[in-house]
Image (cartoon, rainbow, N blue to C red; front, top):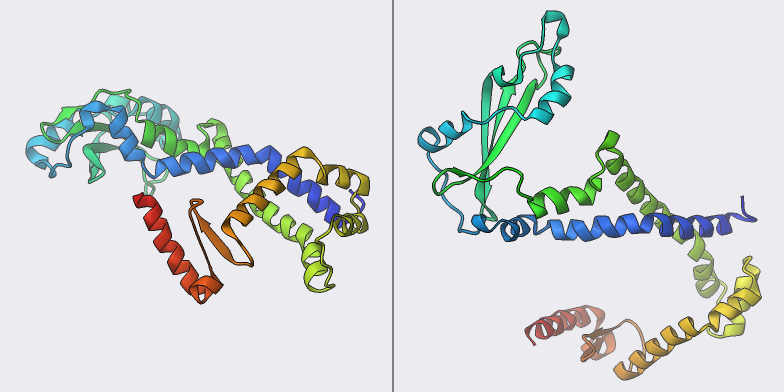
Length: 294
């Protein structure tokens, strides 16, 4: 354990952020792409690029196709031994399972028609459970043509599962990693509050200005940070460059107080200019709209 609780929280905040931050980047990035998963599917499979269609006739179009759907081999191998009661006899062969439920799904974003069949397990361990092996297919609703199996639906079958499972299926390890990363993010928020509360207290309760290098260095030394190392970092080229860029931006906007908002490097508003903070936000919305039109 480090010398005090705050330093322990700093260590936890820093290293957990570095180790699992990459996981969160993947989760957030591909989660954002997943908002457009169906559109990516259409882009990746050219033959599905057509306008949404009305639902075809069940008796004339859908039922003959559903009757050709077979139970999925992977689903059968994984779940049939779990659902079947071996005490009642041998397992029913995959192709002899009786179909007893059908489904079809389409939306305005997904013009192709996804369809599936639930095949009942005849001798289940739990008669009240959902004892089914499933099979599915995708068709063109205009003429009932079945799309080729094995085509990569890059949006719904790659981007979307990646953002919550990382495509790591062994013992659901991908789900656990994502869940751990999410919990870590929460821990980082909490430990961040623990770290920064002393800065808040110093400025707002103890009335320390902390606006000069010497004052900041003394404050860091009081809280267990090596003063010499802090000064070296504070004066480093990287920090100096970022500070200079921020100063140039604030001077260009002529910022004289906070809160203040700049939009696309072209417009600036604040509570004092707009009349109050609420009006400043309304002005900001308007400026953003103008920036998007430009």
